[in-house]
Length: 219
Ligand code: DX5
Ligand code: ZN
Image (cartoon, rainbow, N blue to C red):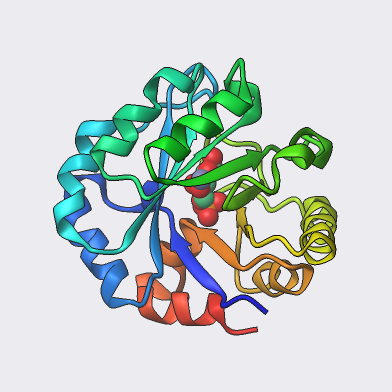
């Protein structure tokens, strides 16, 4: 079984103090930092772009797990790689040519992630699974933190785990949206090995980040 990793989303952090918020995540035992990039076009919300990521880079040595909710994504991949992304995750609907976008991330020597919205079927990425490092299963519709977890997406987690085992592939299965201390266990049991969490990590237990990360990790 793959090690369970926690990727806190800075979407729920205090944006006026992102540097120290990231330090707190590192001290609390986060395995990587999930950065939600939104463009007000692919999703109805706006967040941050490459200059902010670049300025955060010096605050931690943890990997930046950059979730691009932008369309068209292809022409911006380079900018996020340069800014310091380690994992670049894109949505299939946000590119005209998924293969070309995968190739681009690969040429830039970054880990390749593909994200599936709740209504997107696994068929869309079946032919790419041997080329990518991570599948990000959205358990809410992308755009906002603090939404309710959609348990039906766990079927896709199970399905992908089965394919991975059968074909002896190695991609990580990450789950993102509405993760709390109850459904984290269900997600892990279904086969997810990276859990994204914004609200639960930053707001539960009066903001005790270390406790929240430990609780999410324990099954
Ligand atoms: C939603 C984002 C998620 C979200 C996670 O579009 O991709 O990363 O912010 O936040 P919570 O844990 O609050 O659902
Ligand atoms: Zn995300």
